[in-house]
Amino acid sequence: MDYSLAALKLLCSQLKDAREVPSQNSFTLGGILFQRAWLQGVLVSASNGHRDGGPLLLDDGTGVIELSLSGEFRFRPWKVGMYVMVVGGYFARAGEPPMIKVHKIVDLSSSPDREAMWYLEVMEAYKLFYQPLVEEFT
Image (cartoon, rainbow, N blue to C red; front, side, top):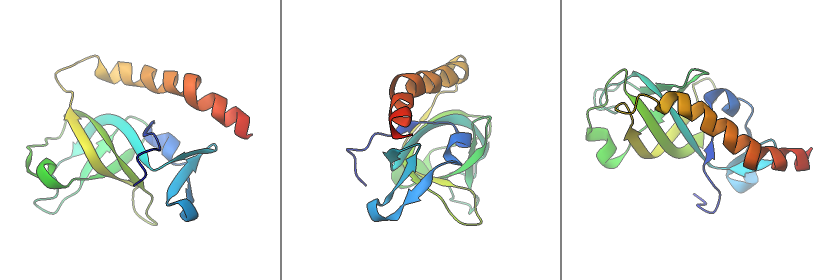
């Protein structure tokens, strides 16, 4: 994992446009190279981080992505309905939902405005940082 590449603040729907760049072990989105994504959403399937074999799925309102937990995260009590922030490596898989290999996950359920603020954060990041790069690329 190349940590010099920023984790992009994205919505699941935006990840559908990401294209793999195998030579760099990364993805590109409108000319922006990335390996990690930063997403927020509601857990719609939670089986204690795969302990019972079921997937942990996050829905951000634009799509669903599978979360792959490792280490201590697998043993935390993740529950359906929790609003969480995740940062991790993005993986597109043929015939399966895309996946984030989680490096960081935080329960934001106690902050009721986080969901509304997240959409604004993604828009702001796009306008300030990503859009100029996309426009330069095209």
